[in-house]
Length: 144
Image (cartoon, rainbow, N blue to C red; front, side, top):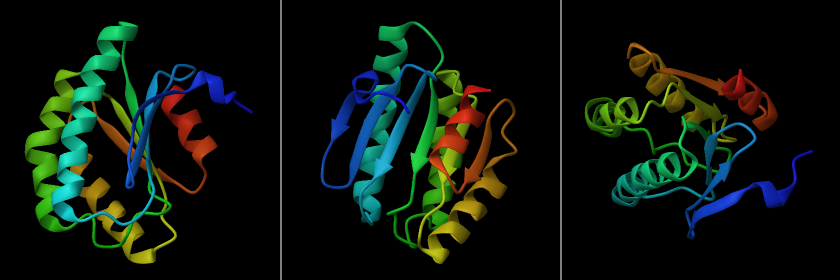
């Protein structure tokens, strides 16, 4: 079991906690509840800034784990998926992010939208996404 002191909290609010796990060079996004679309976009932009800061601080690659167990079913609308594919993934590529793991939501609709997001987004060269039931499996895949 990893020590809580290993984690560096980067951001925390009512919707999201971001922390850096140096054992796997990864930023983990722990969603706390369903989030309105405008707030989701704002938090993703905030994440992008934290990615740059973390890469600069640790001088290395950073990947992502999105813990979606508490995320609502209407987060990954087609409009949000298009925005992520068009704008956000370019910034992921610029920051050498190669893997993003999702932890499945308890909400079946959310899982379907995550699977839809992954299937329409995995075509980006050098960037792979996958969904897992367990956070430890996701972290193992990120570290591989």
